[in-house]
Length: 493
Image (cartoon, rainbow, N blue to C red; front, side):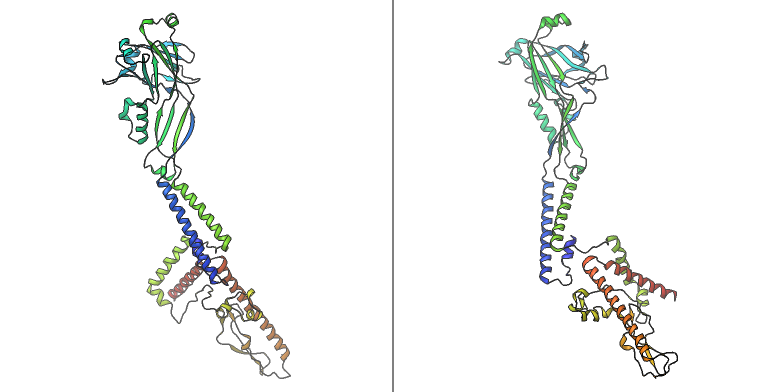
């Protein structure tokens, strides 16, 4: 908001109309910035996360999925289970039904069972250093009553199959959180988003892949700020199925599986070597909004500079001003300091050139003034004049006297040329009148040059203070130093 404070500063030679235009423009810019800030705050409050789709490779094997099998009007049983390794060798799983299957609660409608490997088998889509990594799981199944299964539907007799990840399935709802996204995915799974079927006298091949959804936790401060959020990970297993009629004779010959021991078959296999990731990302965060506000402020500042020029430089920050503020408070409260500064022993305080006590014509810089005004000087009141002179006679001449100042020739102390008085000089004077006039002329030229230089320095300081740099802090430091020096001198005395 620096351009707002500078807008109220009237520079030399500026008309009032230009100052008012600058003030009104700055106020409009400030309101535009505030309106944009409010807009960003509303976007943060009502932000809807964006879905970012990524893919992550499966670096190691993954656990075999949990498999739910549901059947209508009868019971179901896995009579044989087989695993196929990466080298395509097949091995039967001993005691598969009792070791890896369990039934659900008795209820009206379909009877369901679930297969859980408990980490004993792991799948991979490619090469693996683990010799126990498998390519496929095969299940041969039978039902308690084929007639009841047939009468339960007008369709071909079949069983329903769902694949779950072990960390997220309907059989362990107590271990799942109560977030909105988790409930949504549980409902979708219950409605059959990844349902497949296995028909009687058919072989069904189920191909699945992992889909990971990362949902942001509600009220996460890191997410709101724009840092790495804490996610709730939901893994689902979308499936694709292929079916063919069973060739029972081939199975009986190669694997010695009795044809009467099963009615159907299905297999489960990983179809992709990567995980599809859907990740929620906030489109509006506090840090992102702060960056946008900074960009808007920079744009408004650039527009202000284009219209009204550069503001004065202010290289002094809060760290610079705090000590001077405390120093002022201490000097104001200390009675010793007030007593040490008296009228008899004043302390010279350097003040910044100000236009308050100068007329408009006197405040004009030298390059705006006429030659006569330049000779007079705009800061004549700031130059210290000598109050009294000392009469000194020239050696060898008692009749001629001049009055000169005892102060040295300097910028702050200059003896006016008008104070030099010339008396009559006798003809036989060692120093003729012409030589004295030449000396006085040289002194006058030096005095004028010094006075002109002093005016130029003061003018330069005023121009720099009004147009380019704020020197208030330097003035405060000078005042503080002089007060400290005066106080230390008083203490030594």
